[in-house]
Length: 189
Length: 234
Image 1: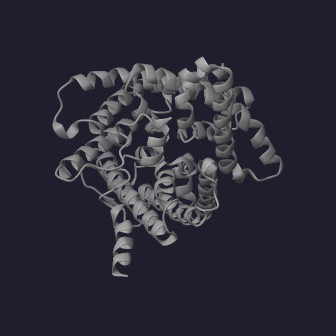
Image 2: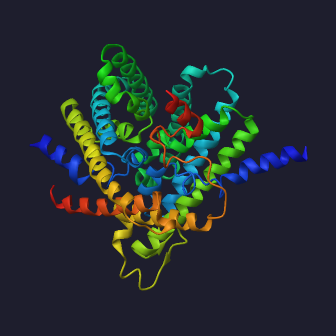
Image 3: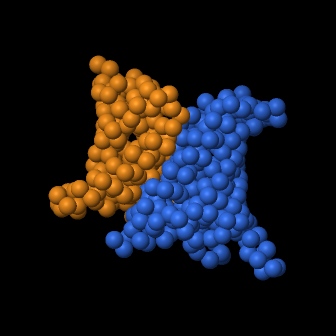
């Protein structure tokens, strides 16, 4: 039951993009087309889950030596190394997968949502299973927001707007309305 | 000499308005949207980021010849994360209330696009003094944008200004009937959208901005223009 709560909470109620404001750069940058949204979303889910699995023992190690204040440094370094490694491995072994996810991978290192998930896992003192569920749910929430928003955006592109609002301002205001609709989920938990 | 001082002055001033990282460069959106519910938080976040930006710019420009090109990004991130840990300690010690208000976003300064962007686009190519001034200017521009946006959201959304300090002002009438939506997530997107539209309107006759992540598929990497181009070339 606890796992379902975490899942619903991260996907809908506390959506990482629309109510926690993490990964906005990727959200605004990649949501232009449905296809790239799917690719980016899949890459983010993958990296988030793996990052959650890897950072768990590392935090235990930091706890053992009583240097938990180094978690930011340790986590970001591990995530950066991991992303680079995955990129090299799938480039060599799985070219079709690399074609689908490859271009998004290097961009994920500096996506604050990934570091955010690992730090939330630590702050909430989740165990390993809860961490994985939390990371998976957050990734799915990110993908959902990206997909929904790419649909909204294609409608904006077709509509007539005042010159000053073209581009980013209109996108942000549309994001505000999508975020408003996600507030409807706030009673679920 | 005068040319040199002029150049240094330019590096400092450009970040504040002309190349404002948030409103013109469209970088560092996450903290801009997340913590701007109170003006005081905006100042705190802005100054913390400025501190990290100045320190990391100085260190990176000093080490620019030592760091090998291929692994420069991880090196930059570690330097930045080090200073973020430092500011976390300082804030926990001296401003514990603000530390809990800013929460996770204090750690997330590490992956703030502005800092990595300046490291990549400026500090790794310029002298120490220019990099420090560039960091200071960009940081103050960021602080100014956060403070401005947080003021709007706080005044309309909760009817106070600078709450949490001794200068707190209560806005009559609005304080009793606040428009709560402005301090909710949806309000953040809305206010930022309107602010950027106003800036677009004001800057209409100026030349187009240099660094723009708006049309850039690599915006998520947010490491400034050059690295975007390099990534696109791949």
